[in-house]
Length: 467
Image 1 (cartoon, rainbow, N blue to C red):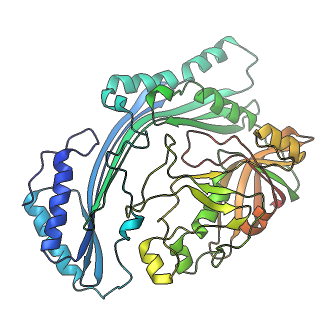
Image 2: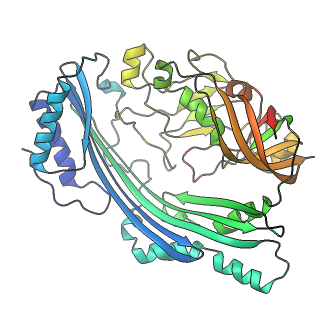
Image 3: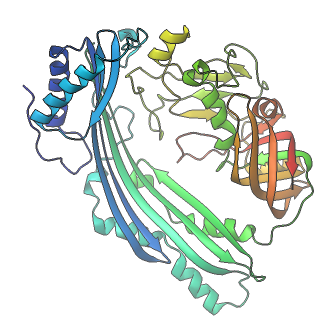
């Protein structure tokens, strides 16, 4: 019998009653005619405290709970979800879902993952050490304090009042402190049971400056940690301020083929299209420029990307994917050779590709330089490249997932002799991702630990810039 749960608790964590309810729903679905079933209970709580010019501006809280049913009925498949956990409603919901699935066309490729592929050691959700018990002690007062203490607006305006040599005026500061907890619980009719819990404490700030000539520029910086003890937002304002100041009065630079250094804060723009192209769904849809690339050397031997989903204590790590399949720390691209696709059970059955995981949850780009150094800062890489453009932001543009061709607007800084010379904006880069990564010069060791994907500063040669 499905039992009605208590009113949704406000911790953002699934309680014993909710997990018991999921198990009872699974049993009921099988009794109602499902051959197999998977149930996922997702629950999260997000608190946001935003400031404007040093004063509290907005407060919001989002509590979400979703029960998702993946049902396999007479060779057919359907997915349904609800946030209503009432006994009578759920019984009716499941029965109707099964009746509707029976009307669908058969799909023999749909199935649960084989038992040997599923995660066996994620029962508490705390195995990766990403859940901070301190989250439960946070109060509205503590959150307001964190948001206001991170603001630098009042101090900066006081400086502007007392000093005549400050070359720019702070127009506005928008900050936001947030903390969150997420809890995912998955069970299926083949005996799978796994859970993942993660907390996060974050702060981000965006400022706008006005220069002496009336020109304006913006700067943004953020930090995050799964643990409150390691969370420190005190330097975010100054970092954002420095970035905005450096972009004032951009200069015109002639286009042409140049070295391009991409800062770690935006380097994902160069990596995400590669990962998307290695996704089994993109390959099956023939919408991937890396189709048929498995075990082939496609990129520079300097390119190494690893899937690090099982690395304990690192943001974004997870022991299983949405099917409950166990993640594996393994190369995605090794010395330029494609070693792994992200392929779920359905795509594997449909294409004959080897099943792996549904997507890469946490990746790391390994450092590399021509001189063999494995410790490279952005400054080191600019010195190594000597002359070119440092990209610190992207302004629009897109790429073709089937061909890998791209065109992006960029902003950043010109450099010469290994030294930054001037800010630049309004330039466009064009090219192809396979060509780009074959022109890889270096990968830094400066990826940010607060980011789920560890992507450092990257450098490429012979990139087409136009003004």
